[in-house]
Length: 139
Image (cartoon, rainbow, N blue to C red):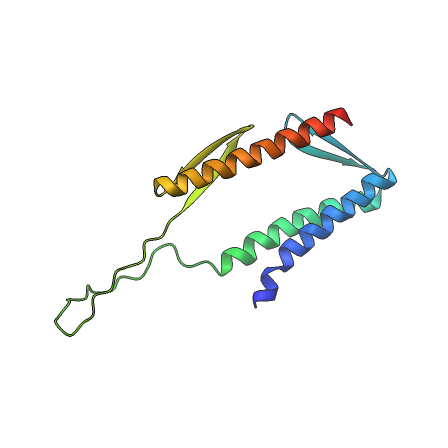
């Protein structure tokens, strides 16, 4: 079952490779509209690449979300600690994320350390996006 989860990303990668071959053969053109890549294809390889990219996104979303834990945990009666019950410290989950609104990253996190980590990740992704945009404009 674990290998099935990687089917979506594998198909996505295959679609991107197909698009790259189509661009190199002249069957497709790659444009950058503001910061969004756009592909215009005229050949069957470009059509196959676009189809595989969409199918890869679809499979990745559904196969990876199928194994996710439920959003709400089932209710259990609270345990009353007694002298014989060992005290357990519940593990605190940490989370964070980066959302790009245009070229600007918006970061959030459950604690200051995670927020700083997401800020660094957002800055790195922004610089990579900026470098790729400049490289494509100069090419």
